[in-house]
Length: 59
Image (tube, rainbow, N blue to C red; front, top):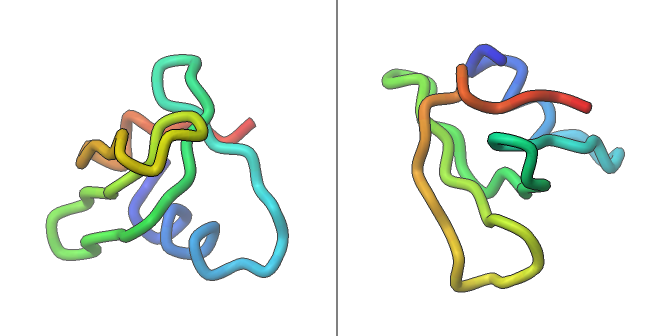
């Protein structure tokens, strides 16, 4: 997905499913300038990754 869509999902009051390589993730932050997103993988708050928004899939 593009950075604009990732930001829209982050700011949405709705729960929108997003996956990273088949794993469910929660978007925590979007860096619009660099098209990067910090995501929480699964349910573990300590398991965060910063990835290109292009790697994220809306499900």
